[in-house]
Length: 265
Image (cartoon, rainbow, N blue to C red; front, side):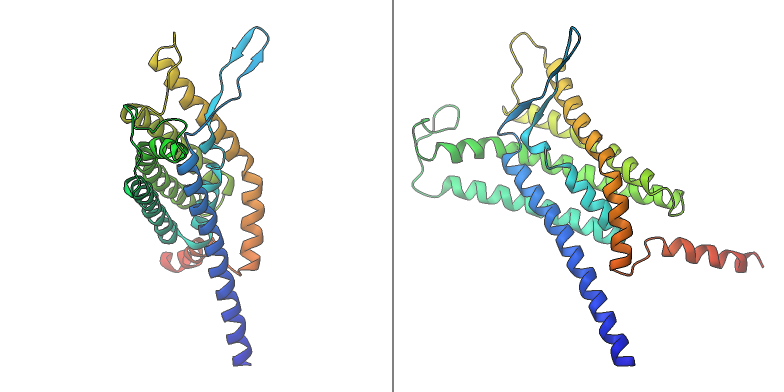
């Protein structure tokens, strides 16, 4: 009987580690893609309401970004703050690794002659690499700063709300943490990228403040809508994983409630 229980425990332990690896892998893989391709294209999703044209411009890198926060929310809910913070730090190391590979690829021979814009001639076979390298370099540094700040805000707000509600109102900590952290990220990445690189261009006749505000609001609105839409998948996912992994995300709060009567005696 003991051997059977031990085998079941090992099976559950393997499940838990596998799910953690998958969530972490999706998170880190998405992070690498959005950093490399992040500013390579602006997508214009502007729309018209009556006589009004509402500008809505996002970078291609923002498209997969909301999934990173969904992954950290799953990890926070199921595995706790420590593991979520560990994944955030690994993500930072991944950003540094991306920067290193871009730098190394640019300095190894044969190195083409670069013009004033730090790019080879447009007909050169290595033009695409150096163009992506130029866009990705400072943008990745900006992303690192914004990402690190936003992800830690996400984890801290998530657990603060979880503690405040004693494990209840799953929708509140999911949306509250993500919406707060993504505002931090949107503002930081746009302002830092514009200030220290030429990857963001302001259209002629448009003020810098207006152009940056459109980018910040557009990117944040996209993230906000995505965060609200992922509430249902988050609920379903937490319920499924709790059964599949035999984990109780609110165990600590239930234990505290059971101990409370004894403390009053």
